[in-house]
Length: 132
Image (tube, rainbow, N blue to C red; front, side, top):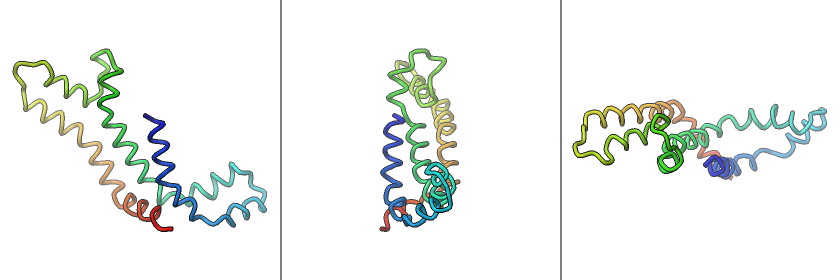
């Protein structure tokens, strides 16, 4: 699924990058910067306000890749946390809900922490990409 995350990030950042004036690239070329140097020294710092939004959405989507992990991972010792939680319920006659709820809380905490850390940047990044 990395191809989807990359395409989604490019789609989210397209309007933001199109709003950066081309004169900045021309000025960097006049100063002797190569295209890679222009990307690293001009465009990358300018994209800092908009970049947390696609990063956070890619992290959340990667964290929740239940179907891919369930299908591709064959050994139980390599299961991801959501698949391991599913294995606590699947094929059992009795379900121990206290273990499932504790594991679900542990699976939710990293996503919630990342979202709380970048929440203000996400709103600003989404708004910057929408305004043309």
